[in-house]
Image (cartoon, rainbow over all chains, first blue to last red; front, side, top):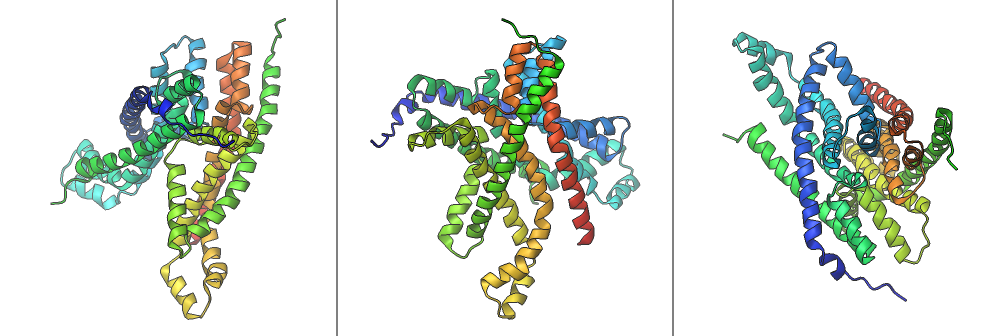
Length: 222
Length: 217
């Protein structure tokens, strides 16, 4: 007998799915802002060889990039409490996302910073710009412009990766999906709808971030 | 009865589970490479329909979480009447995931072969197949090696997600050991170390390949 697809039992729980999606987006937003911030600091230390932080960030980047996000999450949520660091599932999820994105964006932004032509920094200092001004206007902003598409892709990868946060009972979209399919036994339909939601969210985030980047980093064309 | 786990017991169990992580990574990488090659040829073919279909395939796999892909394969295959073990679902899901990413990476490599090479080979009256076989693919292959090795790290890390559909690889075994020993810090630290040992040499190798090919170009 052919299987009868029935999406009604899934759509009946659309409020749960939408709440879950909102939490996924919120997690991603906080994770992205803090993660990219951490990345900027890391990239600065790495590119300008600020000892000993350049070494430390180098080690951090390699450790994070060569271990799975799920294991990082478990280590933070289950492992750290034995050192007395206890946190809620949301804090653990955000922390894991920030640490993960921080490592990738350190490398991405560093590549952008290192592509700054020497002459531009010399030109900036001959115009009597302070070190901070030089960094902000001459180094960081053009660097972010160069690597923005790569950063956006990385934010989306982290958003999609956040689906494993359901495993520490953070009630985001995948958690909602797991809950719904345990109620209606329509596993395939539930995950199908959820996957479609992730897909749409990925598209929207890409559009939004590319526009924001154009507006605030690249600057409006004059 | 309670079983006492020594640190060596934990390490031994993790090493045994690590073999499954390694096996799954190899299978997904090899099969994913083969499927990816087929997707690549469809993606760069002159057939509009094939182009659109494979573009969609790549976008869907790159735009959705690996966990969802695994769930869909796991529950979808059983709807088709195939009796799936977590092992099969993990292998199929990860193969599809890998194929989409590799096809996209390789497409970039093929497209980075200068236009003039196509034109020159066309003016030498080579057929499309001959152009591919003798002119474009050998050059694309050279460019493709470093990013392909780099992506293998993502495949190894991706296998961790298969623990959620119940495949007893390194992460799943780690979770069970953490519950049994009440030593999550040690166990997940060791699990992370296990992945690092698998992935770091691949990362280093990818980086050295990248450097080598950049100098040569």
